[in-house]
Amino acid sequence: MRTGETAAVRRRDLGKGLVLFVAKAIMPELRQVEIWGQIDYDKAWAVGKPAYYSPDDTRLVHRNQLNELDWPLLEEHCRDEFG
Image 1 (cartoon, rainbow, N blue to C red):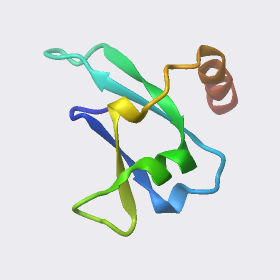
Image 2: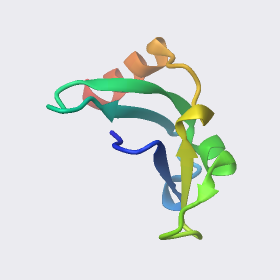
Image 3: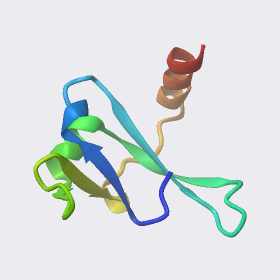
Image 4: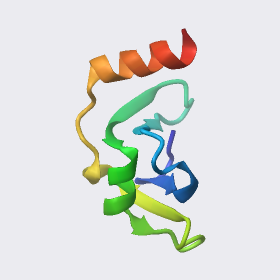
């Protein structure tokens, strides 16, 4: 979950077949989230901009670079991850 407009993509997680799902907590209680979207992790690395704090190992993907949420893919991910 994010508080800013970008999500971090780490080099160490490339090539693992991951999908990045991005959500932002809704203020002030932070009890709900707004799901911004999803993107293939390796594609996120390709379109992201190097992070100022770790330009060689981290890229930042802006929310406008995300795809609309694919609910069946999210359900499959949750089922695989949490049973």
